[in-house]
Image 1 (cartoon, rainbow, N blue to C red):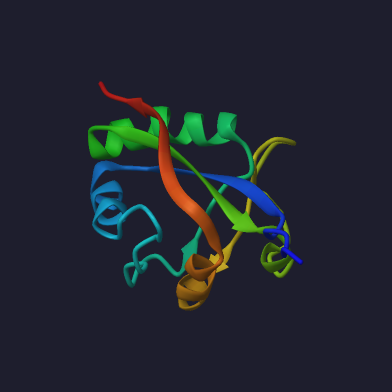
Image 2 (image 1 turned 90 degrees about the vertical axis):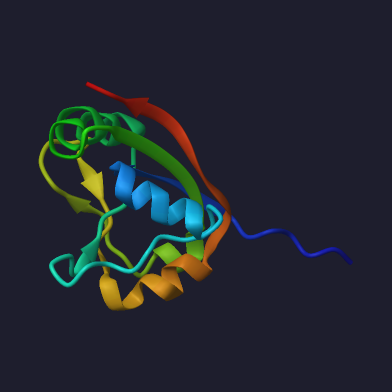
Amino acid sequence: MTSRPPATTTLWRPTGPKELDLVRELEWRAWPPRLPEQPIFYPVLNEDYAVRIARDWNVKHNGAGFVTRFEVESDFLRRYPVQRAGGETILELWVPAEELDEFNAHIVGTIEVVREFHP
């Protein structure tokens, strides 16, 4: 009897070039540890919100912005309530930095760049 793969949820992460380089070093399978001033990892629940951040914030502050997409086991994500960070579509998860290794262990497949923005 073959076991079914776990159900997954698609998440997006807007990021700048430095974080993207670290993801590449991790072979597109994990997010790097947070810096001391970053106590929370914020993946977002829709591509439009990720695009806005990558285009409007990351380009301005980091010289380029990237939208990544990745899958995480849905059962695992239930521990993180959806946070509304503004309007109805501005939804994100708040993953404490100390839980990021465990979060990474539940990524299914690889992290992929789906959009990029430059000045």
